[in-house]
Length: 342
Image 1 (tube, rainbow, N blue to C red):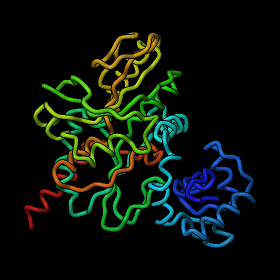
Image 2 (cartoon, rainbow, N blue to C red; image 1 turned 60 degrees about the vertical axis):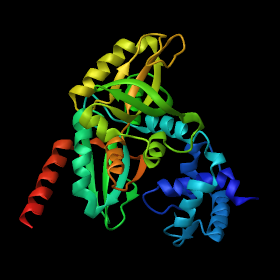
Image 3 (cartoon, rainbow, N blue to C red; image 1 turned 180 degrees about the vertical axis):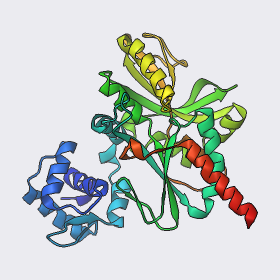
Image 4 (spheres, one colour; image 1 turned 135 degrees about the horizontal axis):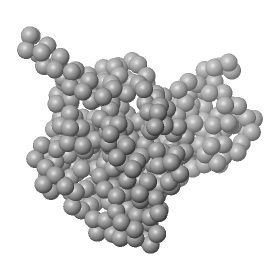
């Protein structure tokens, strides 16, 4: 058996990567069932012995279980590319289903992107992030900040770094699904903004053929100009193109208004039944919906020379732990005051 291409190995490594604590064979077996892999705990332990030998996992003892190693993460992110084709589309569907956020009660878990930067760059980063939120090119008006050495959901933040959690646009899918409206995510792309308004997509990546979130790719490729769009009204921002049943348009418009009212706005446009939106055709019986990219605020940092490490759809996260972006403004004010005093 070639360990690097075995789908069972991939599923086990994925389960360990997503777990907040070490897992034993029984818990791994239970977790990978949600990925469509049915293995007995005994079979899982056999595969874990192989991953231990390959250096992909580490056995912490019978009572504690296994963790994924840096080498295991590396293999999961690169060596299994062909097995991950369409992974992003699957993750979108999975997280939309698992999300239990109630828009009416503003309670429950949302989908969070996780980004890290060097701690010394945090004040400068805030200065680039905030204009993006103010212009409405970020997902909603909420974020969360965590220092190095702590946790953000299932993610361990490296020492010397600051983590910034932003709402992922998949949250919109979850809200719609809870309202009984299925959402099909077609592609992520670069959306051209002119005079503050969206005019066309210039580059697109289909979700069902991608192993990475499209906006992550565009950010690292230095293809965005989000900060320019926020400040001058012209530029390229990350956005996604989705489809909903045409019959759901009136309800979708009501949800859009509710999202905006509660500071969770992210829907830029909703099209008409069976009609193209920004020159992108849709099938009969469907309507298009364009949603802003949740990582856009971090794209503004990259554009201005601040390196970021981004994980789209990083974790499910309790909405009550998010802070309004006005809190970020207060942090920036304190940082600037400290600099003046020094």
